[in-house]
Image (cartoon, rainbow, N blue to C red):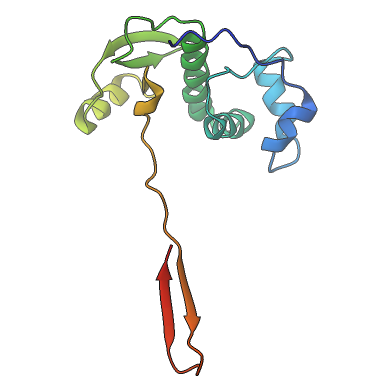
Length: 154
């Protein structure tokens, strides 16, 4: 179920430009990850963008280790390394699996960060990733005579 056989092609300078918001980030990113870098197939696009930005920003070394741990997690997920742990959360630090278990509470997570500040914890079952609630849009319009407003929530 979680073993993904598909593999993305190696990234190119051109394919990474979509993530760049400051000139030179693509070169910095490729210098850090290598020219044969491939995004893990299962890694969501928003996490790819986040990883690119943090890894390309050489000044934030702490941030890159967190993102390298994320890339490690998704590569391992794609290789099927978490089979048998589908109902667990995986803690990763220094690009190694530290443990499988339940989702940490905020206090537990703070304790982990004291010992391993670059650690991440993600669910093997990606449907358990935290999701933003759907947003609502409010449309306000003047009524025909212009003296009042009509509000509609979509």
